[in-house]
Length: 291
Image (cartoon, rainbow, N blue to C red; front, side):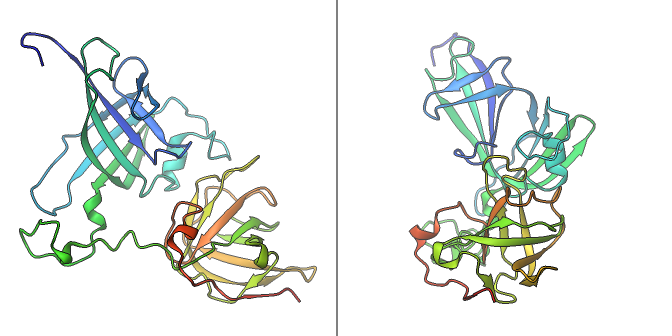
């Protein structure tokens, strides 16, 4: 930088994935900042962060982001309701977090000098108050589950391998549409894909300890919401029709809309929808036909 020249600075935050339409793009600057290399706009907001901590080695660092969202209206639709309501229902848990600092030679120009990557991690917990939301974040190293010797940080050390990003052992992830009678913690579903499994009912306990993740779509009310599955089993309604039943830990913010809300189920962990073909794992639960 030129000696004696003054620069404006601003913090930029991304909570969520780059390709998630519900991700939160925020900046402490007074006006929107368009970033060319991300092809995205950071929106002005009442947002601040704690002092980010760093450590040499594999220790988990943390950061706190405080945000006062403008939307305070509570609705039964994830794409329109208040972020505070979503946070209270653990919608943002485990979402990735990235922080940049930008140096602007002229106010509002965050492209000439670019942006400095400042910190990255994921949401651990959220705390809501009157008109504000606090994201308590841990660095990505909290996903490290291997025992690593002290002071070992070399990339060639095999003990420092990551296992938390292991993909679910499926080659084709089944998707379902919600069925009438579903509640906030008991979900009934009919399979809609893969084609070979349409209207199949899976065996008892096929998806125990897995996750269901709700998809976007016309009229969808739970897009992006997810839940851990305690038990899955066949279910027969009062008319003799058989469905899949999922008993989930905790509860969804509201019941799914029958025939409108759809979801996929993974047997190990939530992943980006469509990634299964890439990983090419051979295991799929054995379905049973309706009778």
